[in-house]
Image 1 (cartoon, one colour):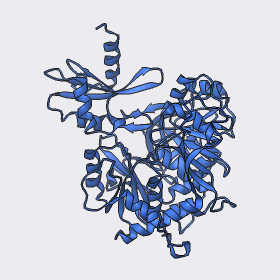
Image 2 (cartoon, one colour):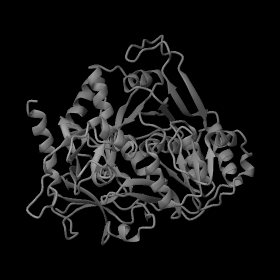
Image 3 (cartoon, helix red, strand yellow):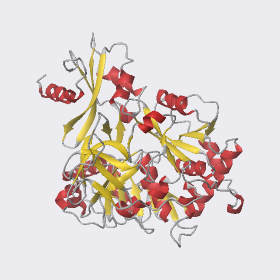
Image 4 (cartoon, one colour):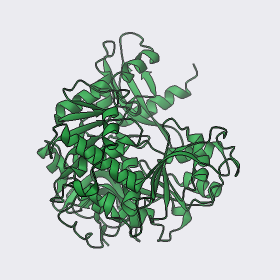
Length: 535
C-alpha cells in the first residue's frame, strides 16, 4: 500500500472573507459581548508556586477582556492605523511585548486590510534591521522596551492603547472583506540557506485551522485554554488566541515573566480545561513534581518539537490526562496530529505523531516525487492545494517553487506512514535545529559568529546532552583562546536568545570529509567526547 492519505480536501474558504472577521464575528451561537475572551493570568501574590490551596484559588487576580471589549479594541486600533496614513496592503512590523496589545494590533491590522508581521520580542537590532531591509514595512508598531532598528514611521504602544480606547461604533467600522487568497499576514522562519524567510499567508489560513480545531484540540466554546507561550510567539497567536476566539472560547495567557513552576497553580486557579505548551515545558513541570492535581484539565496539547514517549507516559501518570501532539511548520501550521476522538495504544504515544487531519491530503515521497510503500521512509509532503498552505516566500519566487514537486509541497521533514495511516517522524532532511520549539538554521548562527575577529572557522549543531534535551553548540577554531563569556556576549548582541549557542567548544580542526566539506553530523560526537574527557 502506498504512503498516501487522501480524505478529500477541506471545503474551500467562502468569499468575500477577512481573517479578523472570521475570528471576531463568525463564532459559536450564544457568544455575547460579555463573554470572557481573554484573561491575563496572574498568580495570587500570597501563593507560592506548587503550594496553592483551594482557599488561595477562590479569587483569581487577572486582567480580563470580554468579546465586546476585544472587538471594540480592534475597531479602535484599526481605525487609528488608517488615520495615521496607512493604506490597505501596507506591511506593518510588530515589535511589541508580551501584552494583549500584540494580538489586538495584529487583528486590527488585518481587519482594515494591512498586512501585519508578528515577530519575537527576542530579536536583536541587527536581526530587525534585516527584516526591515527585506520587507520595507510602512510602519513599525513599537514597544519602546523591545529592540528594534531605525525606521521613519514608528507607532508606539501608548498610541496604540489610546486608539483602542477610542473605538467607533460597529456600524461605523468597515471590515475589509475581499479575496480569501490575498495576503493577510507574514511570519518569519529560518531558511535552510541561513537567511530567515518571510512566509506570506492568505486570509484563508484561518479557515483551514478548523481541521486542527476539530482533530487536534477538539475545542469547544466552553473551553478555557491556557497557553504557556508569550503573546508574540506564533504558536501562541494561533493555538492560544485565534483558535479559541474563533469558537467563542476563553484564552488564558500567563502574565509576562511567570515562571514555569507557577503554571500548575495557574491551571487550577483559572479552571483551565486545555493546556498548550512545547514539550520542553512539560518536561520541566514533570521534573519538579511527581503528582499534578489539575481537576478541570481534559488534556494537554503540545507542538514545536517532537514529544517523547517517556514524557507522554510520565504526564499521564502525574495528571491522569493525556498529551496530544501536533506537527506542522510556518508554511502550513499544523496538519498532522493525535486526535482525542481516535483511540491508539498508549504505548504508541510519542512514537508516532498521529494522523493527517481529515481534509488534508498528504504523502510520503521518495527522491523522484513518488509515494513510497507504507513503513518506508521518505519526505513528508502536503497537497499544494491545501487551504492552509502559504502563498509563498516574500519576493522569492524561485525559493518558493523549489519547495514544490508536481502536486506536492515538500516539507523537508522525513517520516514514514504506518499501516493504519499514522505518521512516524524521522527528523529533518537538512541540518535545521530545534530550539525550544523554534526552528533555527545553523547557517544563520554561523554567519553571525563568523564576524568575530578572533574566530577562524565556525560550525554549529544541535547536541542531545541528556534524553530529550538538545542544546545548540558552537564549534570553532582560533589562533588564541576566546572565553565562552566573550562569545556569549558577542552572540547576545546579534542573535535572538533562542538562536544563541548554550555551549562553545574550541577544536584544532573542524571535522571534514576527503573533499574538505564540513561533516556537520560529526560535531555532536566531538562535544560528547569532550564532556567525557577528564579535565
